[in-house]
Picture 1: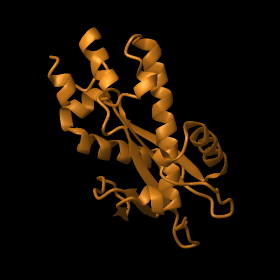
Picture 2 (picture 1 turned 180 degrees about the vertical axis):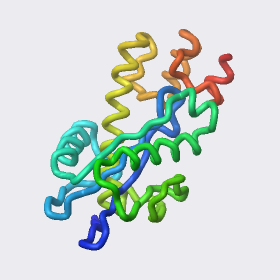
Picture 3 (picture 1 turned 60 degrees about the vertical axis):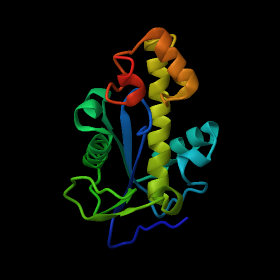
Length: 193
C-alpha cells in the first residue's frame, strides 16, 4: 500500500459508499493519515470482514491527523441523481476536515466541486492508503446507520442487506411498501410507487 503523504503536501483520501443501495444516504469520508503512524491492513473496505473493518476504523480514527464524514440523504439523491449526490457527500466530507489538505486523492473518475487540487484514481481504495482509510471509515459509518434505520423501520431488515437491492430486500419492499428512507428515483422503488 502506498502512502502519498510528503512534508510538502497534506493529502486527504476520499471515498464514498452506498451508491448502489436503494435506501438511505450515500456516505463519503475524507481521511488525512499520519505518516508517522502507519496503519497495516488498509485496503478496499469490501475486501475485508465487518469485524476487521470495525477494528481498522477505530485505529484510523485514533491514528490519523483528521477524518470527516459527508452525506447526501435519499431525498437529495432523488433530486440530483446518485452521481451528483455522491460528489456532494465527498465535498461535505472534505469541508468537514479539521485540517485542510493541500491535495486530494479521490476514488473513481469524477472530481467533486471542491476548491482544492487533486486527482481521481480508479480503484484508489485498493491502491492508495488514504483512500482505503476513507473507504473503511465510510463503510463502517454507513453500516452502523443501517442498523439505526433497521430499528426505526422494523421489518425491512436493513441490517441484513445494508440497503442493497437484494432479492430479500425487494421481497420486503413488496410486502411492506416504500419507506421514507427509500430512494424513489431508483428502479426497484420507483416500480412500487
